Length: 211
Image (cartoon, rainbow, N blue to C red; front, top):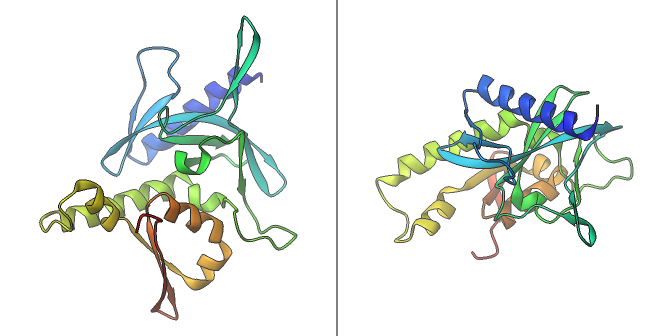
């Protein structure tokens, strides 16, 4: 398949998987948008650019650069938060769909999702495929939405932004936090407060920089 066929296949696969999960799936009527689909997840509409992912050993790799020809030659561009809210990746070898927040993928030429631990023992700054499975992302978003709705009757702050931040809390065990440190570092940078527990008791807290 050429790149256009792969892009179309990825878009259809992600839309079908989202529909199976009960998510809202919308498509733009106008052409030349930077996103392919709009998915309704956790009460929000997310602009999603769909990409074909290729398995390379223990990694799912997807290119995020686009190129177009102009008078001065080819111009390469990368995605920003102003254009899309997430990157959807479909890996045909795994028959799996992934959804990566733009906070993780913004400005990058490519994204790699790791399926197994690195042979050199690296743990930091890794993107784990299991964390970005479309189904897992949708479930997490719905849980956060439920938490926010419960707290909505008793505002946590006078500003909507602060209320959203306060409601965006993720709990994780120390073992998982250690093995997926890069992922949780990105989550905290994007505004999520990460609570780390050890043997069932609170152990540490990773906060967004503005906190």
